[in-house]
Amino acid sequence: MNLQVLIDNPCKIPNKIDLISSLINIKLIDLRGRMIQVQNLTKDFSLNKKQRRELGEEYKDSKTLRAVDDISFECRPGKIFGLLGPNGAGKTTTLRMIATMLIPTSGSICVSGSDSVSDSQKVREKIGFMTGQTALYDRLTPTEMVKYIADLHGMDKTTFQKRKNKLFDVLDMHSFADRRIARLSTGMKQKTSIARTIIHDPPVMVFDEPTSGLDVMTSRAIMDLIRSCREEGKTVIFSTHRMGEVNQVCDDIAIIYKGRFFYNDTLDQFKEEMTQPTFEDEFIYRVGEA
Image (cartoon, one colour):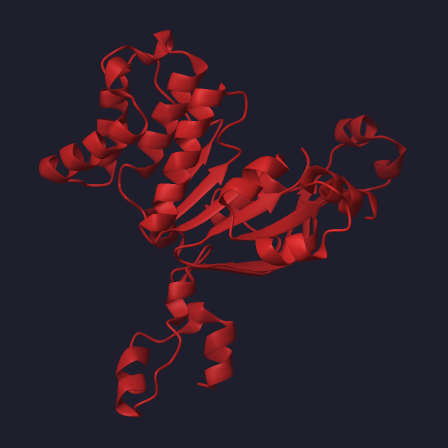
C-alpha cells in the first residue's frame, strides 16, 4: 500500500503497519493518533413541500437542503478544535455525523482509525458527545444517571467510583448528586449531561455549544473541564457561536457558514490575519464576505 495513501486515509491502515514500520526502521507519523480526520464531508436533507414553503422562495423548487458542503479538517490529540459559526451554519450536523448519529451524504470521517459508517460501534466507544439535547431521566438522580451510563459501557465498580468522584469534584456536583434530576436547575442538568457523556473516559470529546443558556459560574466550570480534557491528551471538538469562548480555549479553529468553511487553521494564525479590531468584528466581517 502506498505510504501517501496511508497518510491521507488513516482508516485504511492495516493492523500490522506498526510491525512493518519497525522492520524497515522508519519512524512514521502515528497516523491513528490524528484521532479525527474529516474529508470532503457533505450532508443533504430531503425537503417536503411544507418545508420548502417554510424556507421561502429560494427553496421552492429544491428537493434537498445542503446543511454541510464539502468540508475537510483534522483534530489532533491534546488540542482543542473550535467549530465556530452562527445558528444554522451546520455545526451540529457536522458533529452529529462525527458521533455517528447521522450518515454523511458523501465524504468520510475517521476516528482513531475507525470509519464512522463501516465501524460506527467502535467510533461510539471512543467518543463522548455532549449537546444541550442530551437525554436525562427526570426520576433518576445525577449519581444514578451517571451509573446507568457507566454500566452500559461495562465499567467496573472501582473504576466508576474513581471516575465519578473526579468528575463530580471538577463540576462541583456533590451538593446535588442525590437529588432527582427533575428538581435540578438548568446548570445542574447541564453538568449532569456532561458527566454522563464522559464517564467512560473516552479519548475523543465533542462539545456542542455546552455553555448555551448557562450562568457565568456554570459556564466557567464547563470551560475548565474542557481545558482539563486537553491536558489529559484528549482530542476535543468544541462548537460555539461565541468568539470569546474560542479565544479562551481553542488551539485550532474553523469558521463555518451556510455549510461551508471560510477559515480553517490555528487560532494564532487567525489573530495574525485579523483586519478588524475585535474577534467578534473579525468573525462578522468574514461571514459577511461569504
